[in-house]
Length: 457
Image (cartoon, rainbow, N blue to C red; front, side, top):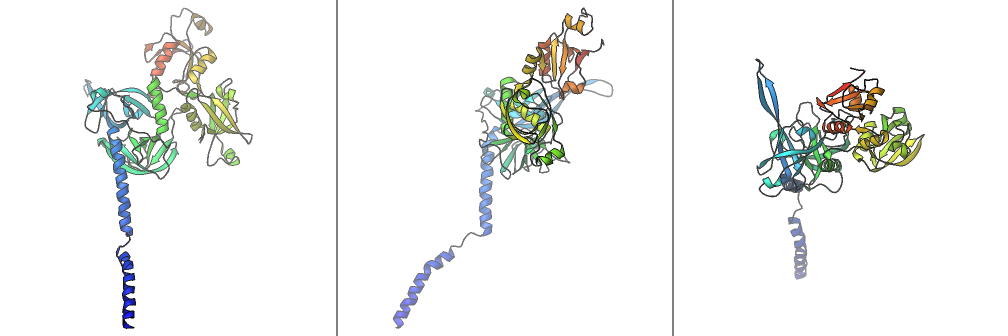
């Protein structure tokens, strides 16, 4: 009996030993799990930074200025600004912000390894704040490393992102945050030509970060850092980046054409009145009210009418009047866009082919148009001078204004039909082709000086 009891006890002990061993192998504590998660996140940040850093450049712009001392003596001084950029092709294309390179006489780009070479501007678009630079890869020791763009579309709210650039001149600075919001508008635009569709992030973005990439945890570019909202001038956790689908579209157009060819439908827009927003339940989506549709325009041919309320354009929500015009411009000439709208409380979907405003107006009026300034012009002739009431032998060359587009720089400047423009920025123009060439080289945001004759003066 004693042996049996001992045997049972020993057996019990033997059976209990494995369980005791399991208890000794304690499960990870909450603190250990937190540290493990932090290490994995830190590794993800480090890998993303390592992937993108060879593609990020520090940009120095130089602008020559003439200043005078108290005695009136003139001196030339070089003003320098700093920014960031990202290499996007093995051929030497660099993506940055238009405001980074504005008014620059010279550009220098410096890479992570310290190599610094000059760059040239291929083209820029102030409306989207995108610029493309070009460098000669042969001047570098070693190959260029183009950045990779995210292929999964736009980032989602809450997604981790890194901002890389040169804040306050500190090159290759990396900051981390999340995507706070998408499709932000009304942040920096100051003109009807501005187009805003920003990614908002709380990753620290400071002066000098502009033009640098915003990347995901795979080191892929999801945006181009462009602006901050701040009262002090420093980061306040409100940074904004241009989504890559927009920046790449503008980039390709600038590389191919040197300037943006904007889409046009021939509509005039207003914001939707509050009572209509409430009646149609558009509080969350917004919309744009068509005030007028130009006769014979692509919008007219597609069946759009004054009074229509457009709520989606080519699959994208239309928030307001300016947002619709921006979507049309960025669609580009030749694009077929699906337009969702309300008409007399009925929901309709129409298809419109986006036109090139310059080409359409030229074909429509048999003259030449400059969309940059918003003018339709025709080469001056003796017959036109006589029609306008001038002496046919006036002896002036140039163009006559046939139409001024609404909400254009020319309209804002007060140009009128019948004005005779004979020079741009003090350079005499010969005909309509000369006018358009010079107008398209000009930047309305910086101001264009037109010399004209009006009412005989």
